[in-house]
Length: 340
Image (cartoon, rainbow, N blue to C red):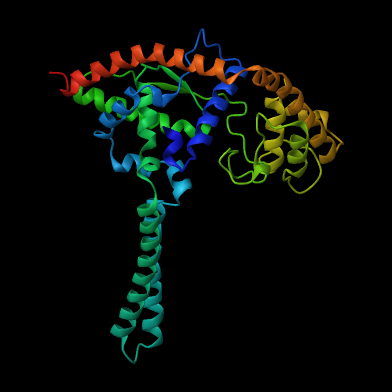
């Protein structure tokens, strides 16, 4: 259900759903130990989301970083713009009043105020248009994410650095519901693995690596072939200088070293030592081969999985979790008064 917060071709969505399931299985998730299922096949997720919507606040959602990034809607920036406009008005008022002091100081202040107001209105109109044209699903999907977690009494959620904010929202909603209706939900903790907790884009070390980014050269795909990986790493941006140093002052190189470390058993410091006296060329060539070698057995397992077998696993997983989800939702419904 998260997928359709942006436009999707139905046939492509079906194909991608199977593909993601294959990736999970090829990565080592054992369906005998962990249930893998398609979220939309367990309707309790959507039902719980609606109930959580009634206790969520607009202010909870407008602060979500991913909503700001995907829509360009940032009410904090709007407030800053209005403050700037006010200061700009004050500065211009003083300047204009001095300039035409002997003519008409009140007129000067009025002109400055009008100019500042027009600036503020311009910012507001831009923000308003972006907000009005963004989808409700995109705005609201963190509540669905909270439902995904709370429905199964989840205790710990492994996340990337950029997802911590969503877990904090989940915790807020759990506490808010418990306070209003009595203890119902476990307030989950999150776990972030320090190594490789935020892999950044190959073409911009200021942004995270993401499959939704337009440029293919911004990321390494788990199913990329060897030639594609070599080309992408070769084109990856680097910093000035040629020394291989793991430093915040070299964010592009630091990101590549983090990727190297994540795909090998070596620490960033060991990698830095390995390439002392060597340049970017040697480092990038080796990095590409490390990634290729790591992904080779994964891709082999992926290609061995048939769509038919994966669909059976997904259906079985949905049947198992539906029992858990139904029980939890019945508890929630009883708390809010839906059960007669």
